[in-house]
Amino acid sequence: MARPRVFVSSTCFDLGVIRSELRPFISGMGYEPIMSDYSDILYDPRSHTHDSCIKEVPSCDVLILILGQRFGGTATESALESFDFEALTKASARPSILEDTDKLSITQLEVLKAVENSIPIYAYVDEKVYHDYLVYEKNKHDVDVISRINFPSIQKRETARYIFEFINFLSHRVQNNSIIPYGRLEDIKSNLVSQWSQLFQRLLSENRVRTIEAKRYRDFSERIDDLKAVVLATIAGPNMREIAKGAVQFRHLISFISCFKFVDHRSLLLSDYSWSELLLQTKVVEVRVVGGEGRGFQRNTAYLVLEDNTFYRCQFNARYIETIETDWQLFLRQSLETRTAISDALLGDSEEERRPPMIYIDEDIEGFLERLSVTSNAGGLASF
Image (tube, rainbow, N blue to C red; front, side, top):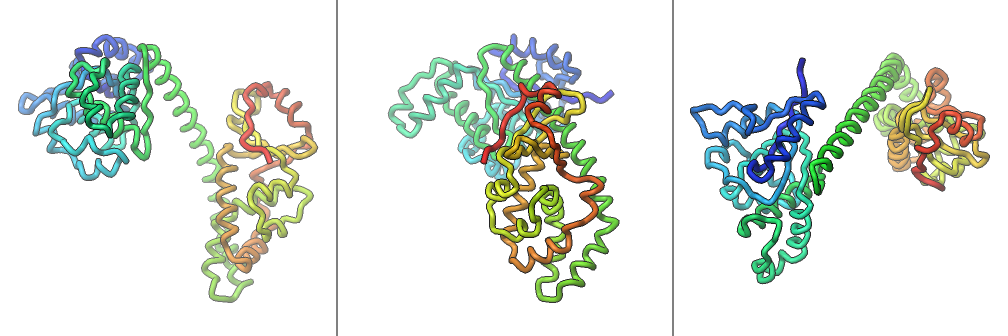
């Protein structure tokens, strides 16, 4: 059975105890640890061990980086040959560590290879090292001062800059830039359990949403030709292409707004209201996100609470509301003629009757949530 492969990257001599404890932890999670000091890597006798470590990284699914007081061994020239340093420079807003590539350590190259291959990196820094890193950042522009500082957490003074600038490289990436200080092994274990659990939950949630959306798109595709024909038949002018495109792009937005009761949907769609003002017009005073477990309850569900404390419940993941808000902002940028044509073509479409994106529940929100036994997990996204 295939298992996720987790590459553990760190210096070995000072972090041997942590590495030895991480190994059974990773195995206990059902994953396969890949560690250089446990014969998990094929050391090809025809090449340097550094080359072997670098070649192993792309075959892994996750990389755990642990930074301590040691810099580690400087990488061999042959290990450097497999990197596109120009591309790596663009991966971070602080790439100065790459100015002297011949000074990079093998541990740093393992992480850079993970960056090249878009492998998720979970980076942990000894809290004493992280404290000294903050001191370094505060003073590094004063060359005279920084040259006299002896950072107590770093074993060799001359390696401090390369360790701290590597932290800068990782923490200033455009994505996957989290750096977590740790004081003991349990901090790393606890964070990994939390992160992996949340990631698994999000993947399940996104898969569920994709499944629902796929069905909606399949239903819609059967009628899209008719829909385009209706739009194009009702408008003759130079912006026909824009209207047809908008009819597809803003269909979910109009379906969402059509769910509001006791309002003139067409007037709302042709207004210049901001998103907050639009919600106020529909008497929505709060958007509340509820997360937790409950019978019949979907995780991270959005509830739009009205003035009388009744509410609408979004049928999809809570992030759907954020998407609708973005669509509204884009819709406002269209000309009034285009918005009118799109609104007239889509309002009253029977899709909402089969699977509306939002339903109105004529019940007090607090009582409803209490009945689901999840009120302790409720949190408001916004109030208007």
